[in-house]
Length: 390
Image (cartoon, rainbow, N blue to C red; front, side, top):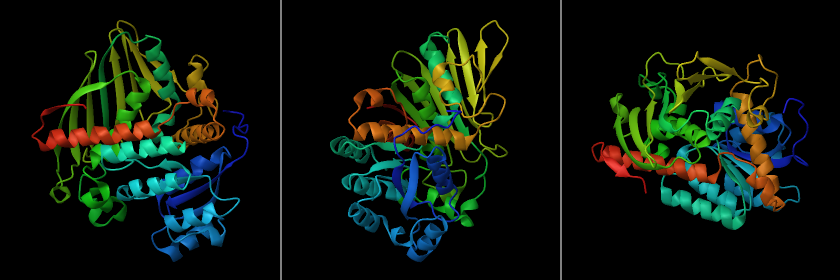
């Protein structure tokens, strides 16, 4: 993607729900979606306060009459326009995702939604059925999956370079919430409120990120059963956890482990995934996303660098600037938004072959994330017991 050529016939007319002034995640969505000119922001319901949302929307360059008080008004009004939105991104607290996604699909819109998609597996499956019925794309923003070396790991594992997969070690363990920061931070406060965050805090908020990376790297791996223990080290967060350990057994004999934590004092981000095979191991750390360790038993450690010609074509397809120049989160998200746009265009024209060639965090990833959290909570609340993954 170094040359920046247009990758879709025309930019998709796009709206946002949430992501208003001061929203870090809203800015990431807009920057990623518009970088490759595959989406154009033309409408939004940016804030729960309608006047504040209009003020912010016009500051972004959105026409005043397309800055709406709420998502329902936006979907209804845009449906009446010949140039109405074709897709919407949802950047609102967790507790609103299901209702807004459902309404968007019913309005005939493609959707990009923050995770978790909803709170229960039953809700997630209902959204999947509705998306299939309406033939709409639902993308879920597991943004780290857009990093180039994730594709490299997927290709190497598929080629058998690691041998038989034995262990998958995952963590997302930062330290920024090692104290009750939510008392003074509204963006954190809702994340530890069960009414808005759902049945978990760190399991759903951060633990599902490395879990999805494992699904990208190891698409054939299936969880057989798991056991989860969760804690609320900041007592006011109970019943939601700020730390959790999840052990997993996979079909075929491999095992896995996810450490989800917001109280790892001193850690900046702490998201890592290590895949261990019978011949070699791979390790990727999101704080150093342009490098991946490749460790073959009995040989010196190799550091694979983003953007280099020795990488697999699947990885180089995501390249945005030559090797040696660092890429980061915005590039990763832009890669995903490009894939979302390509999937939406292919869906609209009924191009099954183009869709089959794409992989991105879609509705199945959203369902699986909700399902995993649900099983973790069930295990932890039963006293950290093994539960079958059904």
